Length: 459
Image (cartoon, rainbow, N blue to C red; front, side, top):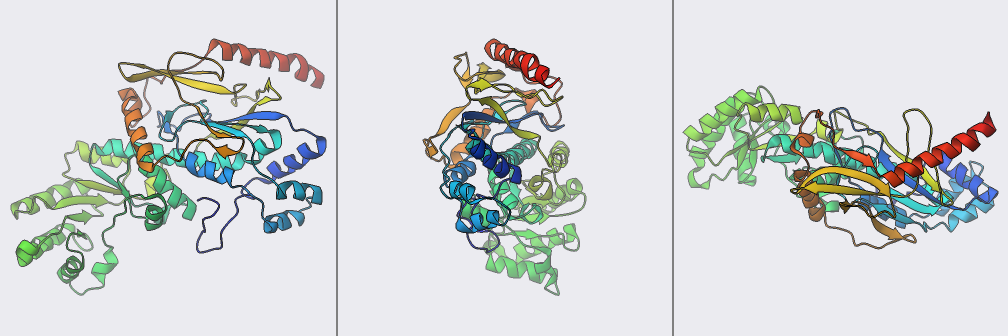
């Protein structure tokens, strides 16, 4: 949520303190030591989750809004004062405005290991301060968007609805997750707040408790259909097939006034139940009544249901989507790659970073992506450049994109990926991501310089 939003009915929040303490302690040190050179930080995923062949960039819009409006309130400063920050630093923060440049992949763009999703060019202290915000606002939405895309792919054209708000890890996760899921291709959300905030279509049916509040199940279905004639009726409170038969009885009772759109089954053997439900409905002359299923679904369960020929029209996916059950965390990092015009890298084992500001070029053959090249920012190579300037001098330079535009980009760009990259399990053929000769040369030079100077001085 942006800095003007509220959480749980609380007063409007400032996001200035949404940072790790060491960002602020380093900011103080940079200021007192006079370290103010320009720095470049890159945000990228070190590795993809075990069963993912791609990720989808998401979260940029909320991140840019948060950075552009980042301000320290007097309350924020008072809190920092109690933790030992001196008045000169508090005065610095009181007047803080981000003044840097940001380059980013458009939301909805598939990306891979070691590819920068955003790059920040700013005075060192400013770039450092927004690290936690960048990782949080880009990492989680990108994880959920790619999870949603996998679920939508498994559904093979059937509708998918986000039911995950109640199981998400907090309000922010539920709301931003609903947006990310919509980018990934989900058709609607049950979360009304997310629908209002982002303009996502909202949908919902009924809960078992409504049925249980009546002494007779048919009375419950009849009453709900009277209030909501085109509803989807939940039929498995007691026995799914018996519930479907009661919907048929209701249809006979109402005649031409029967407008119910579907039935929902939330438990049991969904293949067998959906097939039997379809037979009963068709035999009763109700082919227009759709079958919706929910309860413990993920992309693998959905793939099996589709493969088994289950006559299901829509899937409601909750917990597994909201928490990205197969990969609940993303190894995404924000690393210094240039300082004062000089390349910087890490030599830590398994934690490679590439020096300098970069550009990524995606190459296509017959409108199918065949590989990416990570290059230096000033290179001009064949292919489509993926990083674009989105902020200059702390101000947005591109208009906010509609969610529909982002969603369509995600769909079309995924369709341009090789078929095996879009599979549910890790492909045997990795997508080609290479480093340009110029970037490789810079990388080797920076590493050799570290080995020759820094390591020797510390020996």
